[in-house]
Image 1 (spheres, rainbow, N blue to C red):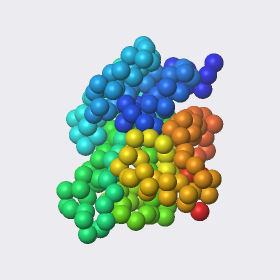
Image 2: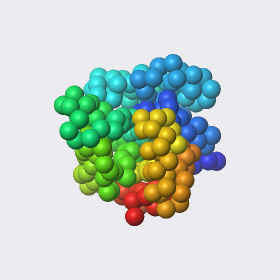
Image 3: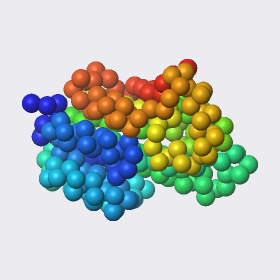
Length: 243
């Protein structure tokens, strides 16, 4: 018997990067998983790889209707036990070069998407009798960084919403925690130059990038019964970058 046998989980942004590692690990431990993403080709490919325990569902996280549809698909697989709000965007720009459209894009996907996801799963968790939400924030929500005002604003919002939701939902046996990754070896690094990425690695006390598998293992801990007394927590996994 593994930790997640017969439990159902919904992962936004599950078709690429950190989300793929979460899906693979969950299925390996007996879970049934809904991968929800705008990346249809990649999502379908991963779902086919993972077999009958996994379904791909198209999801624009800024759409209430698409969140409702994703939760309905998850409930069709069994009782929903967990949500990972993993979808996000990051475009590094200085304050003076960040236009309104870029700022709003970050806030809609990173903040509004997280809010809509949390709201969408509450009734399903109440039906299950419990639930756990993991919101993907960032180390910029612990210390910030230059040239990332829109991303920083959105991830601080995720950090704050996590605490607000954790307090509100605790008496319903629903836990909400946030994960704060530092520099991780995923496609998101491609938005910066190779030189900038090398400089950032040198600023990490452990002198290396994190891996998507390391982040996924932390997420699985927060989804599991091993963390039953944790809610409202903000967990940095960054090689010491936020120290």
